[in-house]
Image (cartoon, helix red, strand yellow):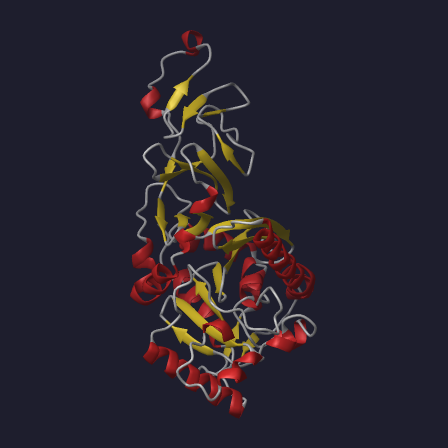
Length: 403
């Protein structure tokens, strides 16, 4: 779990652009549950512990099956809309089963294509982001419009017969929702983000109005760990004071969460210790006193703070189950001054320090250990409700037939 920026020991009131986290009735119910847990040193719990086969973190056959049964079917986060504000703006993202080019169109829509030239299969765009009116392959100069249509074939009179309409870029399912861009890596299938999220999480994410915000910082971190190891780390609230003794640990209650399981996705509400300031103010909004983790199956966590969001997406490596990539975004209200930008830079530094210097070293070591021979099943406690939900959902997806 990432630490909140600013001074984590003080309250940062909700600011313009952030909608209230709960209505009055829900706010009161969650506040009561949080204070009951704090007073009794308890947390929401699953019915029983859960065993997990350690092979899922390192077995190449499992990783290949994940491609067919999860990532070929399920929408994953590719970008925030602020990363593509104008027609011709693009971002690229490498998913485990396809290289992807996402482009803002002239009509304002966003489309996604396989980032591969149709001629000889060269990568069409190497840059992570930018702006182009035409995408030209550096190998033989084939060029494509922003809508994927084949525009130019150099020396066409010597190339031979070619139906250009059949050789545009291969389109991928893509949808813009909640101010975020979602794609499915396999061509030809349907995409319905709202249906995948389900009514509860769809309402929550719609209410966040992230389309009003912008990505002020984004980075990608290549890591030597399975994507599920990374996802596990950012679901649980059990590790805070142990892994983050001098950063997040002193400011958050460890092992105290209210967890809402929506079937495919989970929302976990973790109290900051300053919540004690409103113990005798039952009608006070709890937004400034909690961090909310929204785990979106299969591989994204969106952390909601009182004044900004942080998204973390855990992308499997195409061939090595012991590697993955973490895409981290700091999503904030529109920046209007140098002072605000400096404030968000401080937040980014805290986020990166907490994640890169504290969470990830431990999990790199964990990944190495998980490759050992003869390991027995791992165990998730009743208190690790979010992690149990993740593995339950993972098992359900892995049990579904492939295409």
